Image (tube, rainbow, N blue to C red):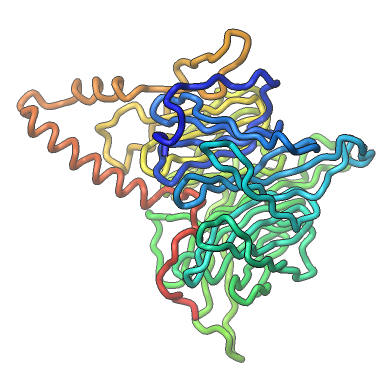
Length: 457
């Protein structure tokens, strides 16, 4: 898709650089999209971090903030959603411009044109999922208005054929969505209010809820490939995190420590019968630390199957071992601001973080000759940054170029290994590493592929 965009890098606009709320990869992994609180979306070439395109709805009369995005399967169009604020109305409660109903917008990534606008939510949209179910295309959106909406699209993803609001009358705020593995995209879960809920996507009904996991909001839920854990049929691992209420006598401290949780969902062996065996949710590991302060929302956690990577409100990123629960690293390269999103590249060993300090940090491993099992144990801090303008901080910081990695690999090469043997060994290793890495990384694309017929009937 890079070839469709200009090969000449363009500088960012001279508008004030805003906080970056979200990131997403193109399906081929060559483009990174970042969305911001000043209504801009930027597309970056992953090979050199040049800015390829900047998207903005120039005809939007209101103040626009983008929180979430989704590329269409051909990577030529991009859905984006977030918040609109009325320039002429003030909210005393929010101490900000009044929130207006938030639409979903469809951009052409080459021309930058807005091709479609889809309205139905009454407040900001906090999550978007693309879904393929029984050969049909859908978007699923979650909003602060408490509604989850199912949007039925044609095969081109250009025309919305129908919408259905999943209105179960119990949710105040829906913040995050994830689809159960091995169910043909029939079942999904949401992080809603203080807990999580399970829905039937086809029947558009709430099946079950697990309330009170946190004292304020559960704002992130994600099924992961927990490769180091034994799994039997019908058992699935997921990550959640949340926000806690503040103490009345000390409003700067939460009533309980912030934490992320690895949980196991155990699916029913029978469904749609009078002897329905309900889903069960068990807590496997609690990831916490005295210095882990993450009492802000909405933010996202991530995992590569071996580590849990979680943001904070102070510009730090905490990394825990998924199996042991031990804290293995703290990355502290951002300013003292809220980190909003964390993502692993779908095929290459890159870890990216974005923050309200208007930057994206890119991390990679020090030793490309490590095996996949230990390849994610060593995550480096940033070494240098590239500035597009002397008066403006670069939005992307880069570490360890491909040439650096190749040089280090050659230094570690056995002197008895011929060049051909080395190249063959390197290709085999890279293929094996990429396959194992891709299988482990949770990249938020659950729901996009039509899965096998459901294990849960």
